[in-house]
Image (tube, rainbow, N blue to C red; front, side, top):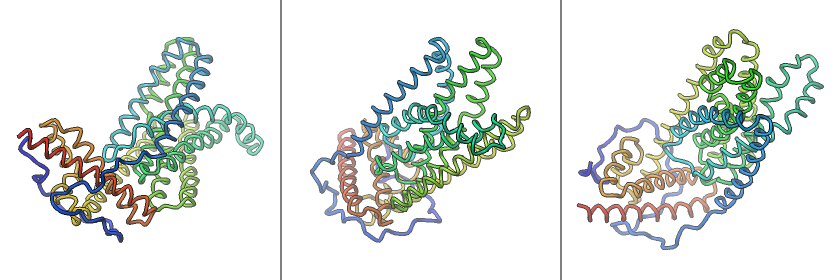
Amino acid sequence: MSGYGPDQFPERASVPWTPPPAQVPPPNHGPVPVQPLWSAAPRGGRGTVVTVVLIIAAAAVLLAVAWFLWWQLGTAAFALCGILALVPLGICLLGLRWVDRWEPEPRSALLFALLWGAGVSVGISLLVGPFFAQLLHLLLPGILPEYIGPVFEAPIVEETAKGLGVLILVFVRRSHFDGPVDGVVYAGTVAAGFAFTENILYFGSALISSGGLGVHLGFVFVLRGIFSPFAHVLFTSALGLALGFAVQRGGRARIIGAFFGGLVVAVLAHMLWNGGTALASGSFFSFYFLLQVPLFALAVTGVILLRRGEQRLTRQRLGEYAAAGWFTPQEVLMLSTRAGRHQAMAWASGFGAGRTMKTFISDATRLALTRQQIAAGRDVPANQATERTLLHDVTRARSMMLARSAAAY
């Protein structure tokens, strides 16, 4: 692959739909070859510091929840159930990583999301759930008591607790919460963390009730860990999706409205799952394959369409920078297609610049999303400042790669 350079990527077929052009044009590039226009180092973001503080607080809560689980289950059961719960967690995180491949989110934000789900949201559910269940018993006297908890209390309390973590990320890591795909990734990560801790509880209950390893524990593991590892992810992703669309349009009131609207959808989906599971009893697998499998397939299809939309947006917005001289048309094609990115990574890795190319791709993608925010008229001065920083970064990365390529060949 060493025969390819940044200006040698093949043409791709044109895309039938493109976003409308931005009203505010990008800054001109200056003389050719492109030279860095700003020498100041990028400013540290307040969101990063706040995220670190939130990570520490969420980790402390998770330790308290872990101590509670250990006290309830004992050392051996806690360790065994924790190992078993890692299986569905790994499945969920691999799936979310696939969703997040186009514009990866900061690891610090994802870590907070995971800790919030596994610790804070579980802690809220354990503390608030019993009191809310008692209130529902009073408000819904006609509902059988065995349905109050799983069908009403759990969906409302759990989805609210998980959703609060996603809402915090909207405001704390706003520069990296750009749209519906980001909302799905953050919400799914929170939900995966919650499911991990909840699975420890369910596996522990099955282990204790059956008096040790046996068929009951195996059944619960297969049911929750193999057949439905993405259940919580699907519920909470509805809220993340709503917040992502609201973020694109901007406005605090719109974001808050989307939070409650998405929360209603997440709660109803959770109720449908828990209620259907409870009512299906012996015919659970019929319920699972007739309803849950099609819903999961629909969700995957939706994510694929959203990712394609991000690729089209990347091509359109970077095309505006190409018109201003910041990128070549071939670079835009490379940056807006998966095949082009893989080809570029292989080319750069041939002379030891793979990490620089990865940074170049990441910064260029963020640049396209920042231009989309400018096009939407949201926080224009702040986004233009981010735009200048990113233009400096991609120019510097390009210069480094060209210099290393010339030295190698």
